[in-house]
Image (cartoon, rainbow over all chains, first blue to last red; front, top):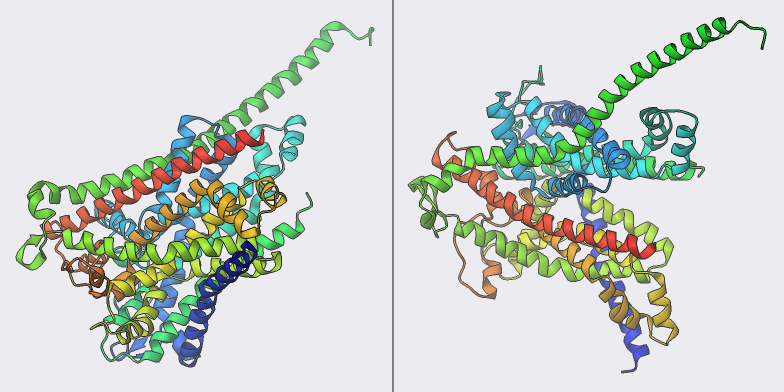
Length: 281
Length: 320
């Protein structure tokens, strides 16, 4: 076999494998859309479950997930953005900075179920928030920190150095420079990071299992100390814990969750690409 | 100017200087506080990792103290009879993870090579968002698909049940692909273009260049990709819980062990924590499993993190 032949075979094999990886992604999404689209109706989205979950809709779970997503944003954003500013603008190449970076890498690697255990031990029991939206949001918020921090840091670093130099040379202080020159330009990137983090949080099940998720609550939560149903947990419940559950409802729930999460990802991607187009430097 | 009384001039300048000084002081205080908070936020990430470990220890340490280690790492997980041997769970996690890695690493690296070295730019623009979409699909949705669609397929392959370690490995492989692909693509991208040019210039084919030059040069980055892929796989919970059958027994050694139902550490926590009494030994043991998971991923990510640090500082040095 000549090396030209080897070259041809190698390229063919590599391309095929890449196809084998990418095509199933399409199939997975198509499969859920095709099987789930029939279940989706106005009633499905706006009615609570009935008859032991086997009929009715998913409204309390959908609303619960939306509440949790907002809660996560409120819990994670201030700390994550401040930490990103620290890493991008203040941190030198010191031992401390390296520890901070290592901590972020590790936060990103901790299994989601371990976050769930932490949330149970810390927020539910120690701080006595009970199984509540507050405990769940804080748990999800901490879990989202690394995604938001690293995306936001990248956004802040992508603001050209000249902007800072000019601002400082005009007599602005370091914080004035960051506040009025760096952050406005980094904002779209920071928003991208936040939305990406939230899309992750909205789809997670393990961290909310013991901190907030309820098997069945007929009404909407009335305060942040209430339990709530949530879409990912609801999907788990109806597909494994409820015998005789109609399959179409399961697919419908999976589809709604998938659309919710992917539309968040899509918004983040659009914000990012628009930012890149509009950028004049 | 010279006719202006000197005393007047000094008066004016003292006033303005003190005003400036006052304003400076005000902004300095304000900035001092803000910058302090920002630094605190940065350092708090270390504090949070510590806090997570602390709370795991607080609830899980009794398991290591009250259960004889021999029994804790023993072969019987029968919580109802008070037997808390986590060995079968560790074996379960190990089998599923190894299976996933064996499937995902070749696929992931090859896809990264395709994206980084072979695909024309327009294809890359289309394919990369797809990989991002895959990483965005919630694990419960993939678990659901594994449960309703993949498990029946696996059963048709001849296994007594579709809910096996292999089913879990397949799903996990798929879920860790985005991690492996994106990090190894970064590693390939970091190989200087001159290396490729030089290889091609002396007559190597594209494949020879990739195999003999690019891959060896990107080796440490590829190792990181594989490590983080393992980290991702070992911690996955919901999808694994739904498709691996959750039988806490140790399958007999051999290739057949992939087609047995197993129960992973993560699935055990998720499945049993809802039912245990707070403060019971069972409860402590579940947290104990959490401690072990935490330490495993901490080790993997710390080593990978160190490697990334070493790599990027070397690259910076190279560019200068």
